[in-house]
Length: 210
Image (cartoon, rainbow, N blue to C red; front, side, top):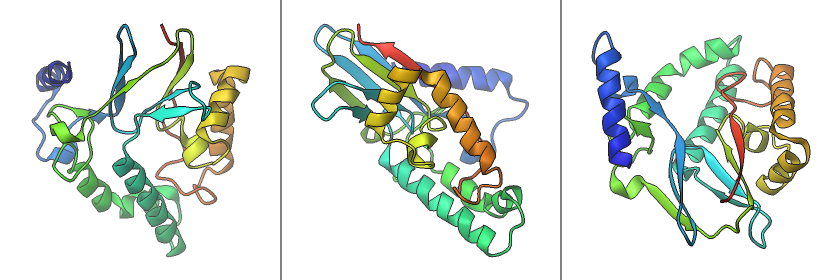
């Protein structure tokens, strides 16, 4: 399936672009999670920093999907943004511009050995593809979330994964989305909570195991 998706993306991209990419950092890319239900369990394939959180298990929540290489990179980038601001950058846009060479270098490592995995027009090395099998009781809630939505955990630290799942079940994902946007707007210059831009795509989908 991953090979088919990669070929489809590559074909559509080639048909749409006005010029071919000059370097890998120009390749289109996106994190994602694919779930397949078998008779016994859920099979999960993930690339990048989207997450699947389930409420199953004694620990209260099981999180799958995010690649630790991306988590480490993102934390390093946030610290670099703070350092650039401390050195005199007047806005998050100016700080981001100064750090653009760093971003470009990081992006050039997508689906490269020693880099990070993501859906793109070239396949990731097999060893970088995360495939998990998880036994989930029928009807158990599962939350699919993008890294932008997971800012509630990773950046703003309002929740851990278990309490985030509990809040979504109690209040709904729209309420959590509104809370996220309020937090982002209150720190529009990314000073209290260093990040590469004030807001990001924030997608969450609440599912029930079949």
